[in-house]
Length: 179
Image (spheres, rainbow, N blue to C red):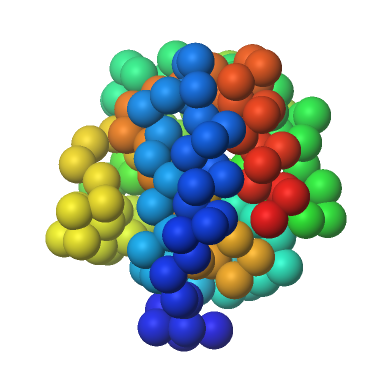
């Protein structure tokens, strides 16, 4: 699907909103029809991907950088969530935004030092993906997280870090997986 293939999904947005309480109360169910299937990034070896490559999976796409203190604090919870919840129909997909010379190496070093075994290194050294979110007033700072359906259509957005591996986070992920 192209970005324009997403239709507004108010019922699904409401399901996400209803699940987003406690530690995840700042998460907004959106379902506005914004699509991200064409959003481009690379893996650690430089191979090009788009979110379309993950079609069929509901995604938690987390934008982070190694210099971002709240991002760093959120990573253990994302790693645990990925260990507990990644499956044939759900994936935690972190996209690193360390830009400039050595950005990818900084991200690799941070993930290695933290012992994060369930978070693959995907990166957008061009910053184009996040710039798109800023332009569309979806995100303003890091970390930012998108909850996407199986066609990479937006169902929810969270500005800032969250305890994704706690009961509140797991309730949101269960709601996402049920849609």
